[in-house]
Amino acid sequence: MQEIAGWIAPIATIIAALMTAANLGSRVTGWGFVVFTVGSVAWSTVAIGTGQTNLLLTNGFLTLVNAVGIWRWLGRQARHEDGSQAAEAHSAAAKVPNLFGMGSLIGGTLTGRDGAAIGTVIDGMMRCDSTELAYVVVSEGGLGGVGERLHALHPSQLRFSDGIVCHLDAAELSQLPVLAHDDWPAALDERML
Image 1: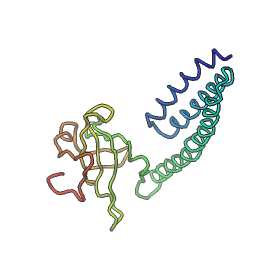
Image 2: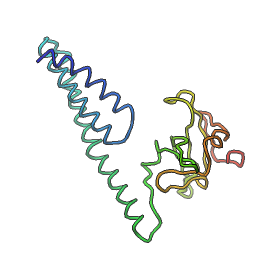
Image 3: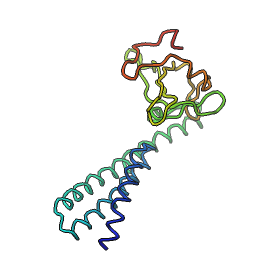
Image 4: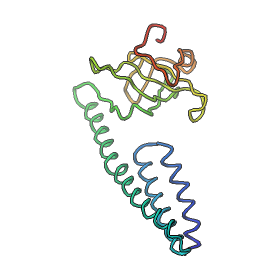
């Protein structure tokens, strides 16, 4: 049993770390915590079999943390996302303007006019005086954040219908002014549009 647990523990821990780090939504993250729990129980089994009290105490605590993660991502956050999706569906079927869940904005794929994915929305800046969206920051290029370029898009350049769509293609997006990663503008000027 201890030998099997010795294999399950690191494999489950690696898979769970990949699942949670990928940030693919609440359900994948939640299941990542389930896999983390399998890993921490397996590590606890190894600890009991080898007499490693420190490993047992650490993984006992991690099992509790993982339970909170499961509740947070598979319970609470998943229900909130379900509510947002229901509101979007209800608005599409009703005679009211369609709704778009703000939780879907960050990390959302930006689709160009040709239907191709051209970037990822990393943030949105709201105006405090009018509660309007001032601009959206989009990442394009690079791999895993390395070598990426940030651009600001005005809300008039976007359509929130079946995802986040803009009237640009990938080449046009890459030609927009590049934002410094740590210094975004207070407002967009004409050069940035």
